[in-house]
Length: 130
Image (tube, rainbow, N blue to C red; front, side, top):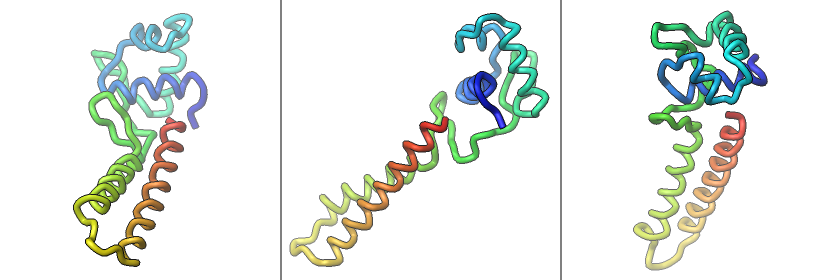
């Protein structure tokens, strides 16, 4: 499993989503020298996580399975669930609000609040692991 600076290098390459040159990696991550960046890139190459192209280094195998890249942003799938529950809550409180409050309406509100809470919790946990 990747740790420390090697994981930082992999995360940087994953977030870039394009081929990145050695010196760009070194400068962007604040590594002390190009040889330090080369050492960590060699570890990633041996593990099969990245590959070297004419333009630089690029991620070959995704280590983060439950993440989606949107341009240069990397978001966990749980964010999609959070957005869904938030939209459902807004719709329930505005458009779908009944004229007379019923127990099934309150039940729907509670279920959506719980779903939103769990998905936000998991989103935050996934983002911290990134």
